[in-house]
Length: 192
Image (tube, rainbow, N blue to C red; front, side, top):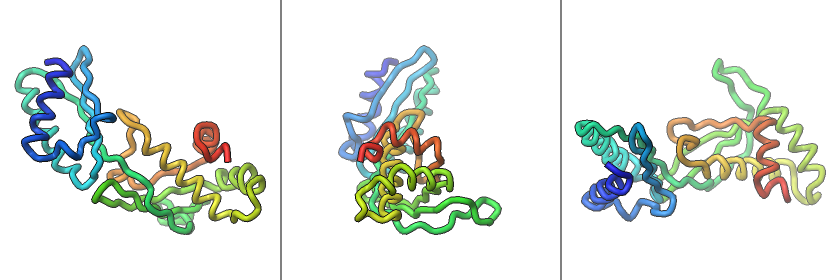
């Protein structure tokens, strides 16, 4: 089976289930490799994730019976809706970490999910040194921190394929100093 045949099979199943309108045609991809096929379906509406995942699971089982291996990723296009004020970050053991925890609401169509970004103390110091002190004096530290968290999440959510971060399965991210330095070099927040 070729990637074109796989795309046709999946699109037919999506049409039959009435889900073709939730697929982003430009970001989804169908690829073939020597050891099998790969499909990445990107959804405009996260409320349809379960249904599309079911269709992909059925397609994988159907192809496996024919001796064809299919790997797939089904993901939604999440955007940041809201970032709340920070609070102390709590570690796995229940103790307070040297970090600020920013609660975040993400949306994808009709779906919402809650996540948290823990900004480590070393990253906070770097933000203070590089962004707060050099920014427009009318901006307070919390506003600058929230903007950094927003840009960090935009970068994380822009990744696809095997690099995709699933905020439903893994609702916590950490912004440490290394991630911050990468962010400053590759996003608008470093240029502001």
